[in-house]
Image (cartoon, rainbow, N blue to C red; front, side):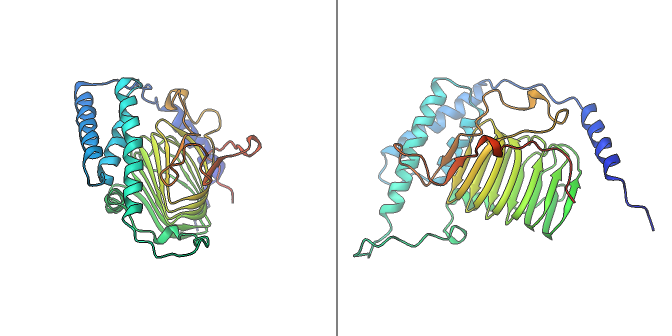
Length: 296
């Protein structure tokens, strides 16, 4: 029978491997002619959609959100952001207006089950991309596992129906998809692009990424570093804190200078005079530092 590998030796070997890598220098977002053209085209489409009688499509809203992440601060990004807010308000208003109401009393409505709420067009596109490609790292239908996971940097990650587990991804993922993860902790080294979370309950996420989009989830603890924003839709009981990893695991240039970990955009809360009740910042004493250690 082979001897069980010593965890401390594995941990030291991985830290040495990470230290030997030289992360790509932090790039400053600049506007290329192609990016400017795309932004201007989307701005025209968005302005036209606001003038039309039909409501704007969720796909257009998602396109504007994505291009905003790539734009540096400036006049164009401000115009797009203002237009995006108008699109969201118009989309929500028209969606609500199209639903018939037969209630004759003022009894409070029963809470909507986020898991069964109808999906928007953009969410259906996202869901269609949830099938793991052959070269991705994926775990499905796993319970009560404690694991330090290894793969090549730039690998996509797909975790679905994982429960009561603690996972550490010891590589720099490209894109991350989490679906049906329950009562589990998932720790990432910096993710190169975005993280999509769907139908998760009791998830503790430790990650740095360009953007995090969360649908139909509740009781989340997010220890994150974000270049764009944390976007939630049909979510509740979301708590956020900054991303803190042990010394030597993450280089300063891998994290954004203007960290937006506390910039949570709730698509179901359009009231500008009051904060959304669906998320809050953790108290400082609840902020934690994480590493590659997997508790047994």
